Image (cartoon, rainbow, N blue to C red):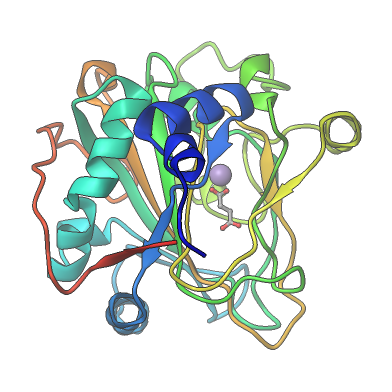
Amino acid sequence: MASTAADTAVTSLADLKSAYEKDGWCEPPFRFSDDAVALLRERVLSISREQRPEVVHEKDSGTVRAIHGCHAFDEVCAALVRLPRLVELAEELTGGPVYVYQFKVNLKQAHEGAAWPWHQDFAFWHEEDGMPSPDAVNIAVSLDDVHAGNGPLTAIPGSHRLGLLDLPEGRTDGAESDWRSHVSADLAYTVNDDRAQALADESGRKVFTGPRGSVQVFHPSIVHSSSNNLSADRRALLLITYNAVANSPARPTRPTFLVSRDTTPVEHRADERLDLVSY
Ligand code: SIN
Ligand code: MN
């Protein structure tokens, strides 16, 4: 269908920003081409077979749960984070300029990929790293087709405006928790399940399904979760977190593959291998 003036209007950067500010998420009007997705999938598979600290496994299992910090050592992932359309969007949504705070791929393997309980990312970044405010943004790229059965990311619209919920008490001594509890199914900072279900019943659930190559954007404070993957289909989700340079934490202590120390603004550089196509 030919695009109309109205289509164009609802997908401008300004309109994406107003949707993001209202709902805590937005979906840009482009996705990665099949060739670009194939290249990213090939890199992710290759990295996930390496033995390195950035590769994290499911509990008591050899199944790879996630890989981290790939933009720092993989040339294709490094090219991905510099793509102008992603960086421009991140700058618009955070007030930019931005740097890459985190890069990860949650693989959610077929049959074995475990859940992510209800949580807010900013709880980890604020409590563990000292990120001053949620002036950061997650840009997610689906590397597999995502459907209701393979554990889609699910967010509660508007919950990013509620502040941080259910923080554990007695963590004012600056003590850090084990970083493994920030990337496992037993998360250190969760939103109470009853509270989250009640919020979702009231405000709805945005379920991020869609074909591989889809791009979705969500706020650091939005309450979100995803369920176990009980299906025969992997659900690999690549997540780039851009943080405003002015919002960098003073003294992060977690491993650099979880919290980048390089706060240099990301340069904008197109890469013909990673092309985006408009809807
Ligand atoms: C997921 O991969 O489903 C969870 C992603 C996240 O919590 O950021
Ligand atoms: Mn999260």
